[in-house]
Length: 97
Image (tube, rainbow, N blue to C red):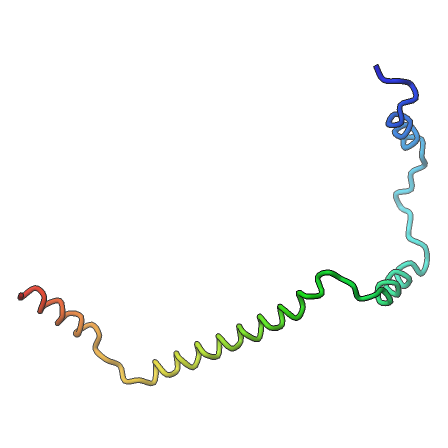
């Protein structure tokens, strides 16, 4: 059996007796104080290394895209060969042997 002075029961009873204010608005100026505190906070975020890493990854991705475009342009500017007939003649030569 639980004791009458159980802290959890006391907490739940106190919460049930507490007044409820579902439409309570934050005090005037809270938003500006929160933003000012956020701006003036020291720059000690542990995820700060992520921004330079993402910036360099984006630069490398752009380089890869430019290389792919240049390679595709080079391939499309070459005269088209007849790869199908080359493969067919190789296949026919192998069947004849």
